[in-house]
Amino acid sequence: MSYVVDTDVLSRASPIAGTSVPGLGEWLDRNSEHLHVSVVSVMEISYGIAWLRHGKARRKADLLQAWLDDVVAFHKDRIMVVGDDTAVRAGQLMARARASGVEVSAEDVLIAATADLAEMTALTANARHFAPMRIRYADVLDSLPPDLRR
Image 1: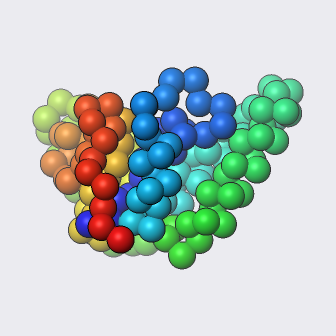
Image 2 (image 1 turned 30 degrees about the horizontal axis):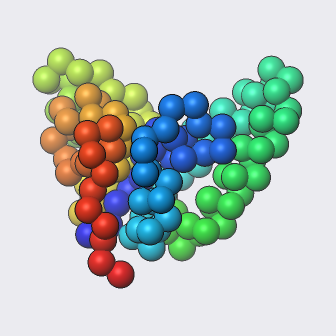
């Protein structure tokens, strides 16, 4: 089993995380070879860094940039791109969620579609957006998944 890590989970493991999930950082470290990152998460975190710089929070932005550079370098062979097949699946999942009364962001639905097409599980702290898409997901706020075999 492998996971596509949602941006909110990555953010909770960042050096400036305000609210942490007990044991999350250690779980991510132990299972890192089974974890994939979407280019969408790289974009979302890059946006946050740029916005911090815009607001003159350079020290915090520099700290996050160094962390993001490490995340990207470490996962470089496990960064998942978005192609036309992902976009098509994302549209289907967005309609599925909306039909159940939930509006999901383009970012969340692209991460969900990436995981779904790769037959992976989305690792999130945002179950209320992933559940209505009816894909495989694990909610770290509920409990951390069991460690994966190496």
